[in-house]
Image (cartoon, rainbow, N blue to C red):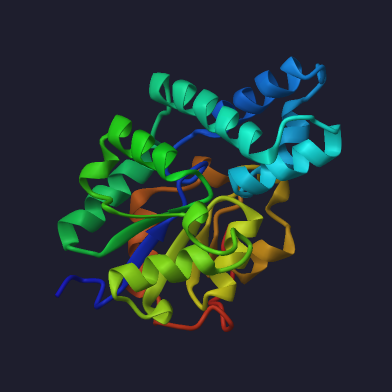
Length: 240
C-alpha cells in the first residue's frame, strides 16, 4: 500500500492541472463577436470559471439573445476550443510534479471536469498527463455539472473509492462546493485570487489563497499524508 493509505485523488482540469481558461475565453469571444457582441471582456469571462461549457453556453445565449440553438453554439465553442487547446495548453509545472509523485506511489487518480470528453482527452494527450490520468469524467456524462457533486461522485465510483477517502484539487468556487457536497476533502487553488474569500472556498481543507503561485507538489503531498481522513462536512481548516 502507498504512503497515502487508501486515499484517491481527483483533479479538476481547467485552471487546476492546466492553464486553459485563456483558450475558453478566446473561443467564447470569437463566437460572440461573430454574432455582433464585440465587448466581451476577460472580467466578464471570469464569472464562468468553474462552470461547465454547456451551462456557460446556455447563459451566454440567454444573456446576449444569440439566435443559434444551444447545441449549435456548444458544438462551435467546443470546436474552436479544441483548435486552441491543441495549439497551446500548458500544464502547471508543480501540478505535473504532483501527478508524477502520486503515480510513483500508486495512488488512484481521476480527472473530473466541466469540459467535453473530447477536450479532456485532447489536453491530457497534448500535455502527456494522460499517461498517468486514465479515469476521466466529463460533466457532459452526468446529470448535473458543478456545483452539484455528480462529476466527483462518478469519478469516485469509477475508481472504486469511498467519497470520504477522496481528495479533490480545485481552482474554482463551484468546484469547491461540489467537492464539499460530495463529502470529499478539497485542496483549493483559486484561479482568480480575488475570489479566495468566496464562501465555497471556506469549506476546503487546504486553501492556497495565491493559487498556483503558492501551490507546490510537496505542499499538497505532505498535507494529504498528514491529514486524518475526514468528511468534507468537518473540514480541517484553511491555510494561506
